[in-house]
Every structure is written in structure tokens, then in C-alpha cells.
Length: 231
Ligand SMILES: [Zn+2]
Image (cartoon, rainbow, N blue to C red; front, side, top):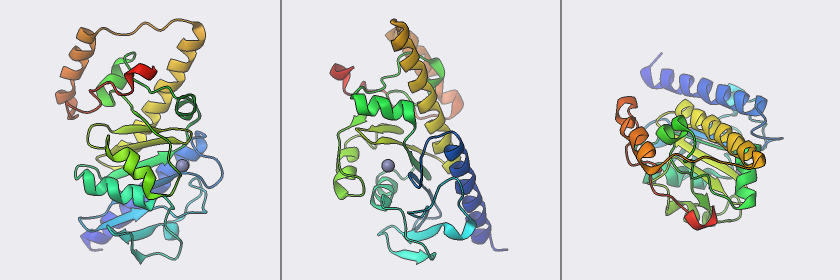
């Protein structure tokens, strides 16, 4: 098997597995959500629309070029293809993207509360702050227009009244960020219900940021505190 075919086969497997886990965890209902992986400089492997992400088969995935033209596959590419392609163009370091509607993170997105994440050390190290992106109709160019202002500075995004997007160096790196985001949102929600949230100090947060280098994480990701006033 040629190397490029081996990479394609491996990425198909990874997307199908990430979709299975996301569906099992309830991050998506019905045929919702979409994922993609960068195959090479010119091609993206993306999930189809109208198919449950929990039960995808190898032949369901579609190869498109960076302009969104279908190169291979019998199904229709995700209706959010434009968002995926734009992210790959603006973030050369990104090789995988997940978009789901995980209930706790989405609840924050519906409530209009960004996840500034000054609470949990692992989340501060791996994600930092998560901005709340203004509402735009799903599947339209307007959605990416709203995300584009934040895309270079964050790896996770809450989409108002919609869901969440995570990006990473691989499809699993993006998927794990989605797990981290949802777990953090659930804990933040529970703390809110308990009536008290002890935040880490700026010094404590800086100490955690300094640890990023050791884990190969960009030092400047999720550093700004977006939408601070809305918190
Ligand atoms: Zn969606």
C-alpha cells in the first residue's frame, strides 16, 4: 500500500472512531455534528451530511479540495464544510476539527456564558479560555465570519445557541479537546449550582501556562479572556 493510501486509511479509521465515541457520549443527536482531517496540503477528509456520526462506514467519508470541490466519495459533504475549510486555511498548524453539540458546553453557549476556564489546571494548560462566538445561521458563510476573529488565538470555541468546535494537531487531538471542554463545562455548571466557584489567581494561572512548553502546547493559545464582561 502506498504511503498516501495508508495515511488515508488511518485517518478514515480515526474519524469513524472519534464519531463513535462522540455519539456514545451524547455529544450529538441524530445526524448532527461533523469532523474533518487534513490529508495533505490540498485535500481534506470530511464527514457526510445526513449520516449518524456514531455509525459511519469507511465509504461514507468524503475527500474535498480546499475550495470544497468533491474529489472522492458518494455522499454529500457536511453542510459545515465551509467552516472546516476556512479553519484549515487560517490555521496551518491544524490537522483535525470536531464540531458537536455536547450538552453542558452547549448549555453555556445557549445561556450566553463563555467558559473562561480559570478553574481547572488541566483545562488551563490544554485549552485556556474558550470564546463565545456570536450567533450565525448554521451552514452559512456568516458562521465562519464570526469565528474568524478568534480562530488564530483559540483551539476551542462555543457557538452561541448552537454547539462547540475544537481544533487540533490531529483528529484525536481535536476530539480530546472536545472531551476536555465538555468535562470542564459540566464541572463549572455543577459548581454554579453549588453556589460557589473558587477561581485560580492570575499567578496560579501563569504557572500553569508556563508548563505548556513541556507538553508541546502553544504558549499563547486561549490566553486572552474573551467576552469577560458577560461572565
Ligand atoms: Zn452544529
